[in-house]
View 1 (tube, rainbow, N blue to C red):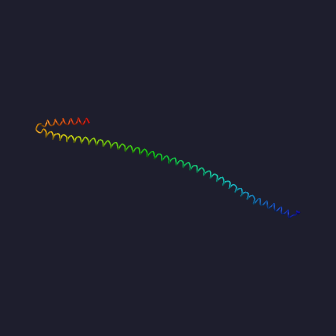
View 2 (view 1 turned 90 degrees about the horizontal axis):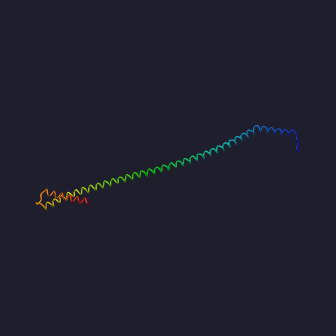
View 3 (view 1 turned 180 degrees about the horizontal axis):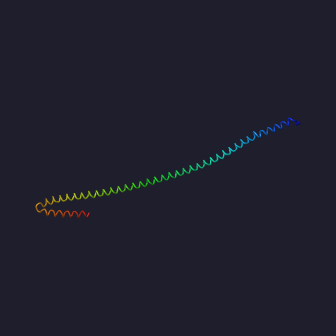
Length: 164
């Protein structure tokens, strides 16, 4: 059995005083520390969530910028290709024009050389005709008659050449 005496009452009283002192000086500060720790953990979790959201926004922004850069790079490439094609067409046209000019110049040169050859040939024909006529008609004809004969011969040659 338990006997209730003054010691037991004194122990109860000591226990309640100890609980009251601990509650005042230890339990409340300990609860305050736990509450502060809970608040810090909660704010850290909120900060981590905000950081994660900010990181996702940054990632989305970077992906958007990367896509924009790719689009701009493709536009630059397309523009360079079009410009190169245009320059190629311009150069090709310039080469064609140069070839046409050179062809015209060669044709004009050929015509000029042909005319010079015809003139030279006429001179030689005239000289040969005069030499032949002179030998054949040495004493029978005079100079006027020779000139008339040469003119007729030249007119016949011109007529034959024009007929070609």
